[in-house]
Length: 139
Image (cartoon, rainbow, N blue to C red; front, side, top):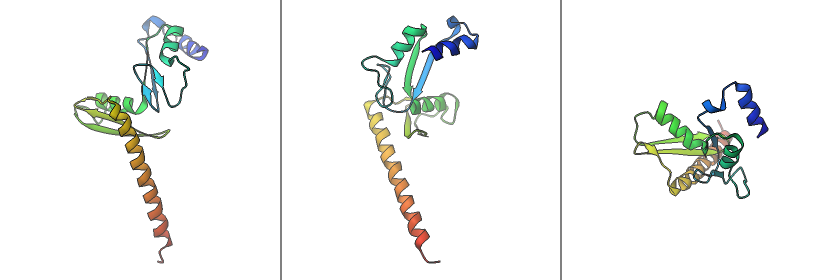
């Protein structure tokens, strides 16, 4: 927490002028509870409440791929679109889904993320096998 306090202090922006802190993380994020179940054990607490209590600044957490989808909807290639899937390749493979012009937040979105990961992993191995087979063919 000291690093965040120092960063804010060094920014020369009064805390009263900071609208909030947003955290985008890979993995399974429970937005309502402020918890990342994959990468950040909180031992019964939440990163959101910890930061809010320490800094007195509203804080939110969300899945990074969902945030990429929201950014594309607001300012990017998905602007004015109703149905979009954004594939985010970084720490792993994530999926942001826009349905009816809104971020899709059903439990099925977690299943979709798992499905796209499996699908892309399958493609990766199929391409690797076909490439290896092609390289072994006599010219």
